[in-house]
Amino acid sequence: MSRGGRGGGLLIAGTTSDAGKSVVTAGICRWLVRRGVKVAPFKGQNMSLNSFVTREGAEIGRAQAMQAQAARVEPTALMNPVLLKPGSDRSSQVVLMGRPVGEMSARGFFGGSGGASPGKMLHGGRQKTLLGPVLECLEQLRRTYDAVICEGAGSPAEINLRRTDIVNMGIARAARLPVVVVGDIDRGGVFASFFGTTALLSPEDQELIAGYLVNKFRGDVSLLEPGLEMLRGLTGRSTLGVLPFRHGLGIDEEDGLRVSMRGSVRESPAAPPYGEDVLRVAVCAVPLMSNFTDVDALAAEPGVVVRFVDRPEELADADLVVVPGTRGTVKALAWLRERGLADALARRAAEGRPVLGICGGYQLLGEHIDDEVESRAGAVPGLGLLPVRVRFAREKTLARPVGLALGEAVEGYEIHHGVAEVRGGDAFVSDADGRALDGCRVGAVTGTHWHGALESDAFRRRFLTEVARTAGRRFVPAPGTSFGALREEQLDLLGDLIEEHADTDALMRLIEEGAPAGLPFIPPGAP
Image 1 (cartoon, rainbow, N blue to C red):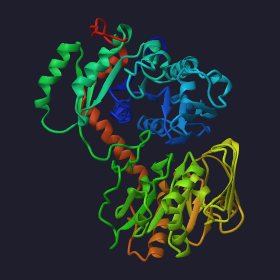
Image 2: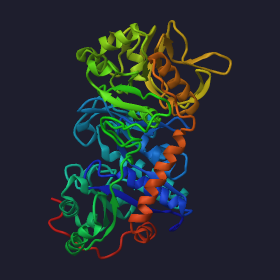
Image 3: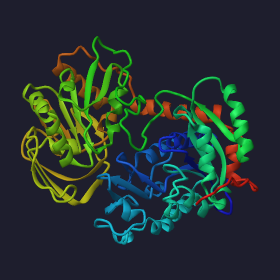
Image 4: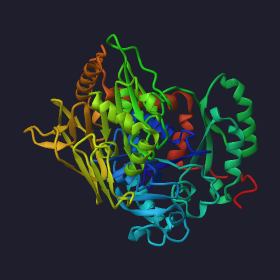
């Protein structure tokens, strides 16, 4: 696939956010690697609170880490050079090449004036200044891999942002990448979305729009075919596949309140329990929730029902309550108090009922928070359920640690500014010599900074056994559940969707040869 020492490439754009770009990109990566193609994913700019730490200690979007797994390669910062982590409706932390460089307002980042404490490279608030570094990352990947499958963001027809675009047509034009536009037919209006997306692009951008891909179709494809032919007549572009609707394929996407292994927004349907009882897990849906995928491994266990909650009465029948990570620890703490959830958590702790806090959720379970970095709120009292004091450091901790918890091997990843001073209780994770590595346990309340710890199968089973015993449930973890194997099955399903329902010959031609010449212009074009 090499063209002058550079691998082929393809950009997967979408008519909207959540059209399915992430999973289609992963599916193409898995299809290609199964054909023996050395492939890598890429997203120039990601906006997400769902992030991951690479082996070299760089923070990237979890969607790109998932796509790298689909491609069977180790994720690196090159695959997601710019990550925006929202801290409010108007500002985000900017992570550049895996390292935070400061907070910036949306207006500052996308081309307005100013921002809050931007890094030197972003001084003046110009997203456009990052196009060069983003393209260099893409070129490095193309020099290393046979093919690079790029994911866009939102829609390429966001005409208000086109001038400074570094993730859709901006990189497609600069790198001469063919573009396939994905549309979610489950939302309705997919033909208008395909046509309108194309017609709002400039002639130069339209030259690269090489075809369309329908996602989440239900029913008889033959009923759709006349419309696809009419769309081809109107645009001169073919639809390269109609992917059927499948439950449970929304794995490790950018954001959104979902248990991704189950593909469900509010509640995960549990497989039949291995023992006599189910186990009920309630996840507090805190503001700016980050890495909600931590509970995917729980949802994957037969007999475990996971639901996201925002009212104190919803904790009453829960056998385990999880307080997840958050980009706004102090804001989440205030939210828990306003909703009455803080009092409900305190009652649980007093009654000896299990609570698990992860990262920001761990921090707010402590006695005291000193935050001059994230919220700039200064000294704030925590919930006081763990003997822990937290101070926010300007340097972010990014790590991939390993250790022992409940006598079982466990590994995870850390992404946090808060530094915990543990002043009592028992350590949650220790090394082989028994030295404390992370976290705190008092009674049935546990806190840890480690994301992903529940993906360690033996530890997860031991932890759930303990929860069931404490809750008085006759729940038994299924002995053969492997979260890693389940994730691989999901990725193979994505590859199957592409192989069975997309025009793979056409996709391969685009990757190897680029967009075909002579694609017609659809008026009116960009304003």
